[in-house]
Amino acid sequence: MPYQWQEAEAGSRRLHLWPHRSLAPKGFVTFIAITVGMIALPLVAVLGSPVLWGLLPFLALAVAGIWFALVRSNRDRQILEDLTLLPDRMHLVRHGPRGRRQEWEGNPYWVRVELHPKGGPVPNYVTLKGGAREVEIGAFLSEDERITLARDLGAALRAQRGD
Image (cartoon, rainbow, N blue to C red; front, side, top):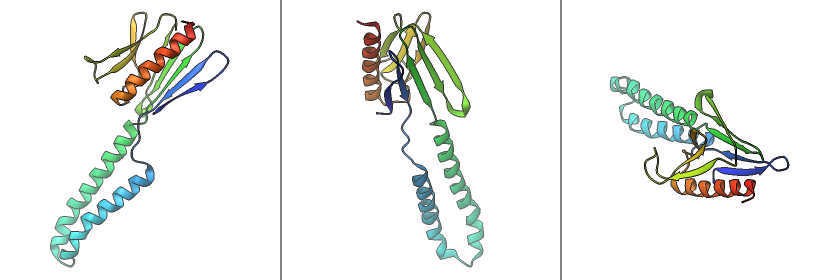
């Protein structure tokens, strides 16, 4: 699971959530090297001819496009959500891509965990609703992981309240 509960101070818990990162830096280098090798292999037939110079810019542009897309995808996946559950309040901080930071606070006695099977931006959308504000949590997780997250969060809130 791409989230983890941690016991902090007495009576408080922390939940860290992060998206899957399927391509590690070593895998990125390997993928680019294999792509360059596979693109360069057909060029052996045109070595020494002017056709090589006609094809080379387009092939370099294709590799640069793949490189840019993978770097952008990795940067967009640098999300971290941190939920701190204290006896008298809960605090959610979302560190988004490109340094964007969002915060939300609520009283754990009044906050509800809601699972929206349909109607959200993703199936089984999980939100925390406290007062007039409703915030999403774990939208980058898979459907099954969001269901488990909603169940775990609900259990943690009930334990915090003493239900």
